[in-house]
Length: 329
Image (cartoon, one colour):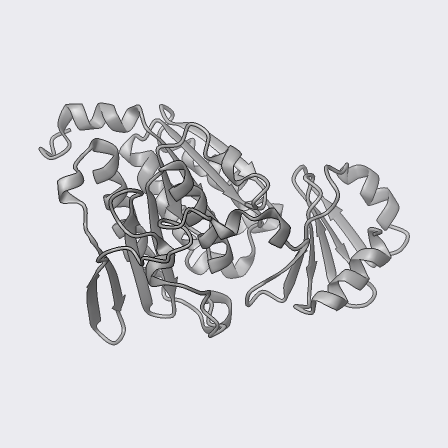
């Protein structure tokens, strides 16, 4: 409140606001930290994954105990965030963000923060936000490079106007690494633009895509400009990412040697422990997930919402074979 551009009135607006953070990894943990400490009234966050040792170098809300417990990222994050600001309402959702739940996740939300690591989900966020008229902060970080922009329906182009297809380079944090300071900077750019929108300081919004390379000391600021005339999202209102017919039940998680199978609805982890124990090398289970080490060398990770990770391969055919063998068609 002592910061004049926000003040008491702006702080009240933050308290009355609701944000959605998609992805609770490197960017998402920093974004959630900023939103909760800023006093945003409702912080809803969703992620499909669980905490692993390799995450700790850059995912700021997690520690080694979260790894030992096998907590989903949103559960581990919620435990930390509740100790930071008890006045903020937290909604931690263990789920994959898909066309089937995207619009329901946006109910009551004033702004969306991108903490994802792939363009398939980013385009889904972009299309859903522009369909609903909800501002969307884009951010990406890999190696020593980062980029960020605030995208506002009716005021700026959408993500598809300047990034028209997914990055095919195969470069991800899990393949070429990332230094943690890049993550902090990108998420801080996102967070401050989010705060400007939430308090109504639209005249202070940055109207550019900022990109930088911290190691090489490069910085670029590219004006967003006008929307593309034939943009299928913000101009033609077609929203291609919301086309349910294009969704696949199996998705390779880039750089992870993991394939996610959508599953067939909610499952009981204890029932599946009993089913799998005779057929696999080892089974471990907690309240949030089940892990099964397979004789073939791969691992299955089952979630209560029915999703299954096949870890140890990025081959969709191989993953589907193992899924069918142990889980069924």
